[in-house]
Image (cartoon, rainbow, N blue to C red; front, top):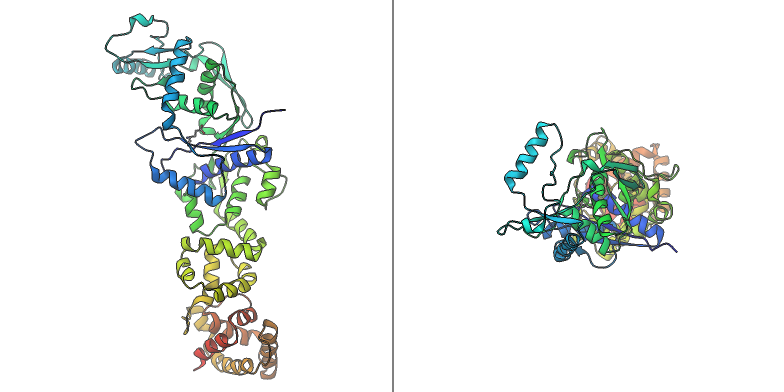
Length: 474
Ligand code: GLU
């Protein structure tokens, strides 16, 4: 039996969880779920200057909102520094690494020489074969790996294919600094090995690191995990993703009213596809995802597509689930806190009843807030400009008649009984239905668009409906 799949997401806590990071997490999560494996979380906080607790919290919060769960406790890379040191020293004992005492001035001179020849800066290996007894007494050396000098290092990448790196281009890079701190390159390898990671899935900006990391694995005699370097996300115009394109933290997408499921669906489809399927549930993605099917080409982020997809997910979600997500998201949405403050049981029931009509018109939860606002405003309603236009001319006279017709409804107050009353009234008065429905809508909601006006009447109930209409005719 092959080993159980262990993936990991390894963000650096230097900022929020951005959209590219969310997609990397998603691919790791999907692959682990698809294979019945686990996904671990490692916070790569070795850069003490730039790492913050606030960023770590934002990343955990973003993952949780998206439902991208990890197994076990998050691992702090910084806390594992003693272990990184231990492995570096072990490599020295094994003769696979060595102490280097080159001074900053010497290193600068090496860089100068390389620059003059138009070569990338590289270390010339001057301490590689020297006897440890030559070490200066007063200096603490850095530990460098003995990288192979001939042949090539091949990364077998499930997305990029076989990527070959000539070893003459890999210099003896530092794995432990002279202050005793590990380099990032080294820490990642030791952590992935110790955490039992079988599959590394990350952005293709780490592809060249994969070659250097392979050198460390080989030196330790460890198995190299399966590697998948996924293409970065670009803007719709093909340029590197910037804020303008959507390079926001995932919490910004929450505030813009996207459903986690829709955002995950959209992100999954950036660089991966399953036939012509565009709309996928989480269960679909888990069932269909395979890392080997991810494309090599850069994916393009397109807000319009995300929004359209979000609308589809809103419409196809069942009302009770949508209501739960909507209520949970209210604190983050523009206009949401005001609604949350008034959300008693009666209004919750009204909202649930109005959802079928509301969700037909909303591509985001922000639009849903807007659409639902009429349920939460107190009389007399503010009437927006377009609605005011619908109440001009003889509209108020028509509305007065409609008020009378609705007041006369006996028995149940439902969309059907309200509709029958209005249709009869329009017919008797020789009005087109729209000539009655439009001013009604304006009076009931303060807006020119809303769910079907008979549904609005039903949701608001007899008393509130009649009162809102009366407000506009007196
Ligand atoms: N910490 C790295 C980053 O945020 C990821 C490193 C890795 O996945 O190996 O880009």
